[in-house]
Image 1 (cartoon, rainbow, N blue to C red):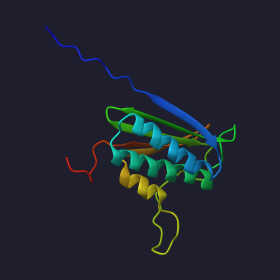
Image 2 (image 1 turned 135 degrees about the horizontal axis):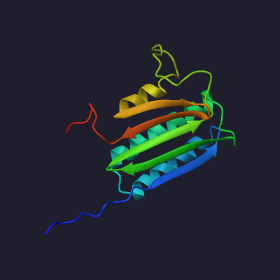
Image 3 (image 1 turned 90 degrees about the vertical axis):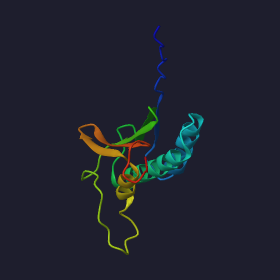
Image 4 (image 1 turned 60 degrees about the vertical axis):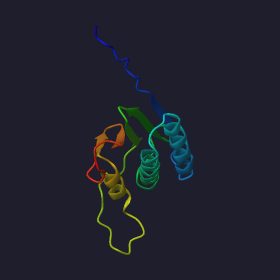
Length: 144
C-alpha cells in the first residue's frame, strides 16, 4: 500500500498600486499581512517586506509606470520559498546594483536585495521591466 501525499496548492497574489511613493508603505503592510497569514517564517516575512520596499521605491524613483499608471507586484509561496516580482514600465537603464560612495545617501537598494535573496534577476521586455527575487531558500548567509 502506498501512501499518497496531497499537494499543497501554490497561492499567488497580484496587486497593482499607483506609481507613487505613497504606495510603498501600503504595499509593505499588504505583503506582511498576506505572508503572515500563510505561516511564512518571521525572518522571511521581514526580508520580503524590505525587498518589496526597495524594489517598489526604485520603480517609483527610476522607472515609468505601466500603461495604466501602476506598478504590478506579484508573489507566491512555493515550497517554503517566497517568489516576488515587481514590474513597471522600465527606465532609461536596466536595474543593477551600484557601488555607492561611503557618503552616498542612496544607491544601495539592489545591493540589499541581492544580499537577502538566494536568487534574483531582471527581465527587460518591450512591455516593461520586472525585477524578481526568491527569498527563504538556500543562501550563503543562512546556516543549514
